[in-house]
Image (cartoon, rainbow, N blue to C red; front, side, top):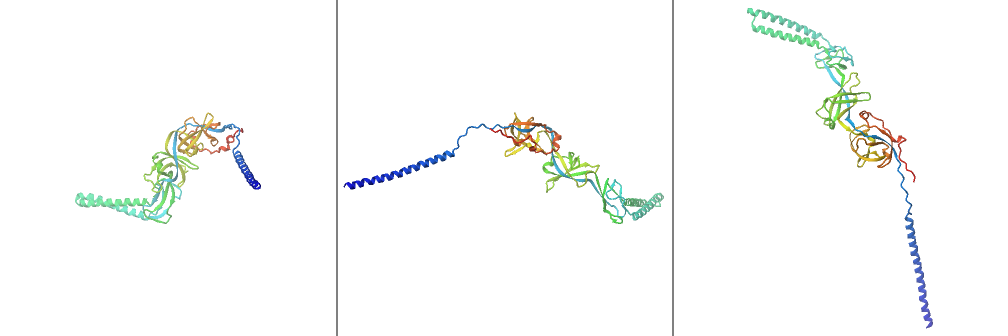
Length: 401
């Protein structure tokens, strides 16, 4: 009995010691896992650094322009134009005949009434002689009958018939003389004999064109003006013609009432004096038309504008700082200049160089102040300059803390 009791008491002690060892091992594992989580969290959270004062913003070098309105600005548009002769005269023959003489060479200057072709006159001169003889006979017959009618040797009806015959023969004589004169074919206008269509020995009929005379003392510049602009123009308005060598002005002399069905443009002609023949037919020129005159136009350099998703912005200098302004551009656009309809006032100091290096509130240092453009400056092209080429204007640098 004593041994059994002793064995019974040993077994529970062994079980309790096993369960105690396993429990301690699990507890130790939990502690280690918790310590690892704490360590990871501690590493993930950065240590708080001491507060550092922000870097001081250094002023940016800029150039400005004082905004001043132009009292009167022409709103213009430019279209290409073709130079055409002022007049072209095709000279026809009015009688039939053989070409006998060509007194003028092609390209020579001729005046109104100068002979450019002469036809053979043999047949027509004979016709003149015949008609002259008939007219002379009929006249004598009429005078004879008129004298004898009082004596009863002729009736009034015979006298009237003689008078009619005299008139007919006189008209035939005058017609023959006219045809003889028309064998000398003459220029109808002043100009140059641009082309001669016949040669000596050729036979021409009435209506055959024997030459073409071109008047280039004035020229017409024909322009196809879009429908959106043609209603601004009136006959008599001045237009300016420009090409690589020539600059001149002339009045609008013709505006077509009917627009082209395909291009929706209207033909407009500008007449220009051409005494020195500086314009030639077929030459291309740029024609500058004026739509209207705009008073107190605010013109600024196009490069001063910055396009954003909300529109256009510029920067002005106020109290040595750059300030952003929203603006509304409008026509006209004159090369590097644009008109500002809203957003700027006279006297504003607009940043024109160094704009790309500033933001709203950026301190700036004004290196140069340009004058506002006058009308001559607006109409004269100016060379484009890259502001990065100016060593005085550069991106701002920051002072190390």
